[in-house]
Structure formats: structure tokens, C-alpha cells
Image (cartoon, rainbow, N blue to C red; front, side, top):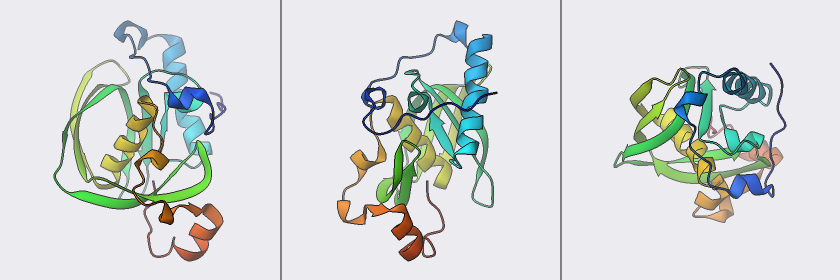
Length: 176
């Protein structure tokens, strides 16, 4: 496995529409290696989600994992589509491995139903709630050329990481 360079805000790959993955490519050694490398990169950077465009691969692939009480298991979503957004909205602090040292509040639906292919090309149809649902939406935004800053409705909450940790983190334990 290898650590991949993370594309940072300003890199054009982050503003592109990602291409669908050909199902016949999923079982290939190179694609499976990309998945492994993305997980290693995400864990090394202490993230809970990573989209392929963030490692300069403009294809519809997401990896996610979060340990802990409100966490979720290792998940791979290929060519994901959100079929349903729950009616309730939640506001969470979000950050991004491609947007260094910033946090901001984003409002998103607290539940989604997603269809995708898994790591082996099998069809997935799943519901996610809470942090998992927010993470899915955050990572799927990368597939359409969006970052969390684009979803912020109030830039007054945009905060440098050091100040977030100093003033806000204790009040809000969950951050994407």
C-alpha cells in the first residue's frame, strides 16, 4: 500500500465531475490497489472519508470509516446515487482533507438512502443516518466538483482549525 498525495483546494480535479467507474474495472488489480491506498491515505491523514478526486483520480469512488460510538464501518461506494434524503436537517461542523485547517458549519439531511456498487462490484442499497449520512453527502459532493465551503450558508462559522480547537471543539464533539 502507499500514501497518495491529497489534492488541495485550487487543484482543478476538485472542481470536475467525476467519471463513473466501469463495473468491469472493479476487480482489477489497479482499482483494488487504489481502494487500499485511499484507505491508508485517509487513515494516515486522520480523516473519516475520502473521495477519489481528492487523490487526483476523477472517478466515482468513495472510502469511509469512523471508529467509536457514533462511527460506522469501513465502507466503499462506487458510482453512488442518493435515492432519498430524509426530511430532517442537521447542522454539523465539517472539515476536509483537501481544505487544510478550516472548519465550518454545514446543514444537511440527517438520513439518506444510497445505491452503489461495493468493493467487489455487488449492488448495495443502504440507508445511513447521523454522522454516516453526513459523511456520505460530504464525500459525494467531491464527485460533482463541490467542497463543504460551497454548502455553507453562513460563512461567519468558517474557522481556522487552531481556533476551532480552542473555542468550539469541546462544545461539538462530532466533526466530519
